[in-house]
Image 1 (cartoon, rainbow, N blue to C red):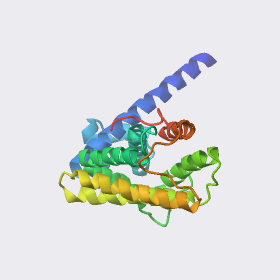
Image 2: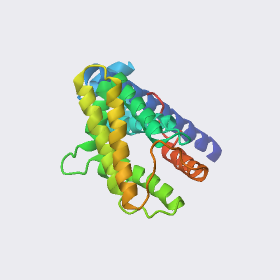
Image 3: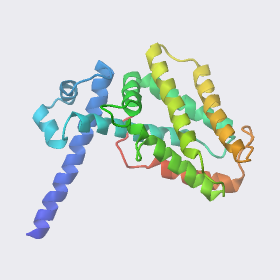
Image 4: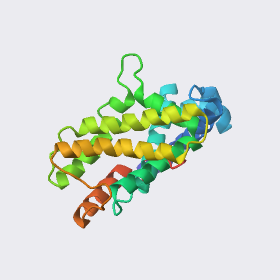
Length: 241
């Protein structure tokens, strides 16, 4: 009997995950149709479902849209880390990742606005999600700290670098989404140069000078690759972007 109960609980847990993913994907559709202020009713309509079913699987509106933001962050993180090629010069790799990022903004402009406005704005006195101890900035800082420690560089200040990188990308995304026009290639190039400049200043403060037009040595390529795999976190959220 106990095994039967465990099996039922497992099936329910798996069903709950599937239904939550369905509503999260529907929310992206609703946001693209109606903008960042899309309502629960818009999501239910996009999912061809009903509010009672939604609320059986989400505690409230905040749970729903928080899950949407979390899933989108995971999907974007995987896309960007997959675009980074550690074996090529840093400048070229940064430009590839920045171009991929701008392509995502162009493809999902309203969802991009929703994501970064949700992540970067404080509500009712609470820290913005990106600023929390388990938020996007802390996650990126932890990954970069891991890499620096593996190559024997003290990571002090890396949290500020992570904040600068995410802040630059977020504000660029919101600005580009507001333009309502296809970006030219220069947008991605300027973003890449700005991000690299922040990294370069940080590294120079540690006494490290990296030629952005030369590939890293093989040892650092392998170390950086391991860090990217950690940051990518494959399987943590639905890949709907």
